[in-house]
Image 1 (cartoon, rainbow, N blue to C red):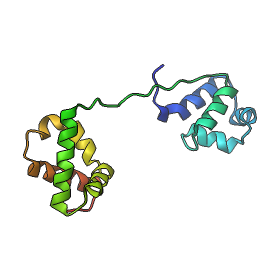
Image 2 (image 1 turned 180 degrees about the horizontal axis):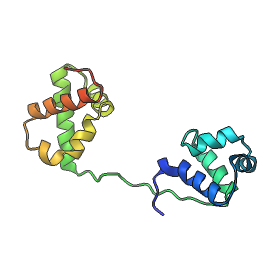
Image 3 (image 1 turned 60 degrees about the vertical axis):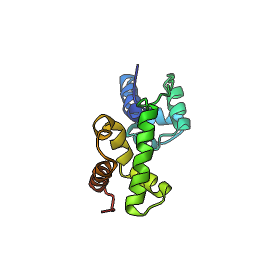
Image 4 (image 1 turned 30 degrees about the vertical axis):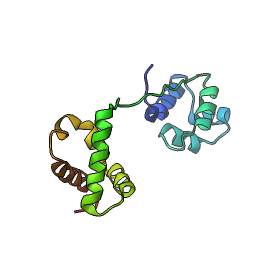
Amino acid sequence: MNTRIDNIGTLIRNERIRRGMTQEELGERVGVGKSQISKIESGRRLTVRTITKVLDALSLSASVRLQAAVPINRHIIGYIVANIGEFARTYGMTTREASNYLNRYKGLDFLTEHYEAEHLLSLNDSVQDLTRVCLNNGGGVR
């Protein structure tokens, strides 16, 4: 089964219910209270240790497959680096500050996602687009 980690709480709840167990019963098997099981099932307080204990209590196992979400080629990397540099120059930031800012306010995600269209623009136009994206996501440079 191919399931995202952010759905693990729901999967645990569904399996508990399928087995006819209450949160109290699962909590006893795991060694925690009902409120902790409730938090786990809602996706809070999830750690590898906690998930492992719950899976053991349910006689289940899980595996994790790590992979890049989006393969990035060297052209995209070069384009992103150029945009970070231009953004830094435009707003009087260091490269690190610009990189952190663009990452925090989704500018780097935007460049990666829209590379096919954005790389056809001038760097100045790309910086304007980045500025708008970051502002829309809570950034503060103008």
